[in-house]
Every structure is written in structure tokens, then in C-alpha cells.
Image (cartoon, rainbow, N blue to C red):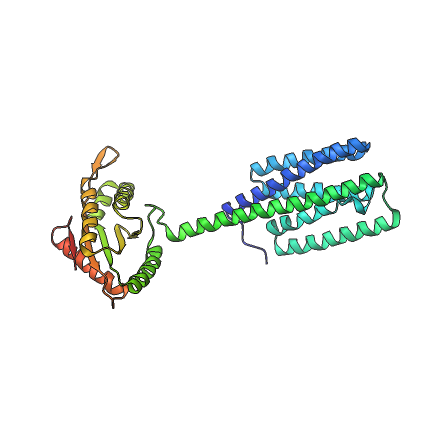
Length: 344
């Protein structure tokens, strides 16, 4: 069964991987050009000049995100070059090491069937070269000292290139993991933590609170008449208001607090180690900040207020019980006219 199509991000990572291979290959072929000029093998020098130009073309093709064409150019250059170089100079030249770099390239870009086909083709080519070398020997041998130098150059280059590519891929994987973690824990609009992260932070804070017998407060916040703002001025205006309110809330809290967008126009704040009085002071700063906020959108000055519900966790409380009390306090604030803080 063929694999699912690659995503845009995956294609970008693969293009970077292939581009790095093409760069290293071009530099190695540049070294070959100088080497064969030095040992007096003009045919091999010109062959490597052609190979170098192919890898320059590969880099250009990759800049256009033409991955299939780039892979085709890799094949067109690598297989004939390895076969020609090995037949001309012999198995000990080490040119066959280049074929091993094609294995991860094909594995990353091809289907299972293509990977299996390439593996068979690779083994067949290596076997054929081995048989031909035993039968005919090198067609254009060079002095033993030069051959030994070429062999070790190829071996060292293979090890260095493989190490560099492995490091590159590891860095790309780490970057992708960081991106996935961000998607899983951060609200895309406001940049605050999301509900999933908040629930994880809650579990950790509860465990600490029970172990240290400290205090833990929960503050629920709801922007007043937010639907009316959306209906009157549009969702872009509402998004702007959410972002700016989130910025004000973030500026009012401590580093140890956990602020999250709970959903829609509702926010949640976890305050470990804070008493109810201290948490109320934070809530008042947040309330005053929103009340003073003016968001200019398409020439209109938009204002908003927020209602707050606050409660302190008791030793026997579950998360649902604490949230229920905070919601009750929030409802009391709304009934009392909004733009205020109540606690239960």
C-alpha cells in the first residue's frame, strides 16, 4: 500500500534534506575534479564536472519544490557514475559508498513498493559490479597509492555526510516535535495556554497543594456582551478584542500562575499559593485593565468589560467541584451587573 501524500511541512523538511545531500555531493565532486586533474585522468575529471553540474541543477529544482524531479536527477547521476567509476578504477576506489546514501533518500520519498524495488536494484547493481571486477579488473587503473587515497577519501566523506544528515534530521524532528507541542498546548489566536494544557497544570498544582498543604485559587473570566460585539462589528473585531484582553490578563499574573483561554470568550486562571484576598487583587487588576482597554478596528473604538468568578480549592475538592463554584461566582457577577468580581 502506498503512503499518504506528504504535507507541506514534510515536503519542506525533505527538500532541506535532499538539498543538503546535493550540496555535499557537489562539494565531493568538486574534490574529485581536482583529484583526477592531479593524477592525470582527464576523462574522469570531465565526468565529475558533469556530475557537479547535475547537483547544481538539483539545488535549483529543490528551490522550486520539484521533489520528484530532484529525485530523478539523483538517480540519473548516481547510478551511472558509481557504475562507471567502479568499472574504470575498481572496487577499491570506494565509489559504491555513494549508493548507500540513496537508501534513505528513496525510503523518504518513495512508496513501499518503490523502496523494495530500489533495494533489489541496489543489490543487483553491487553484485554485477563485483562480478565484472572479478572478471575484467579495473579498465583504467591508477597507481596503488592514489587508489588508496581515493578509497579513504570516499569512506571518510561517506561517514561525515551520513553524520551531518543524521544531525540535520534529528534537528528537524526536534523542531517538528516543538511545533506539535505548541499546537497541543497553546491557543492559536491569543497565544495563551489552551484548555488541555490548563487541565494538566491543574493536576500538577493540586498535587503540590495537597503535598505542601498550601492554597490554590481558581479564577474564571468571561467577556461581557461579547456576542453583541461580534454581531455588530464582525468576528475580526472580536478576535482583536480577545487578543488584547489576553495580553492584559497575561500582564497581570505571576510567572507561576497558569492563564488559559478556556473557550470562546472565557478565560481561566490558576493561582497556586495565593490566598483568596490575593487572588481577588489580581482579578481587580485584570478587570480594571479590560475596562480601560480601547481597541480601534476599522475606525471604530471598541470597548469591553469582563466578569470574574473566584474560588479557593478545599482539601477534598475535585477539579469539577472547584470549577462549578467558580462558575457560580461568575454567574453572580453577571447577575450583579457584570464588570465585577465575586467569590464563593
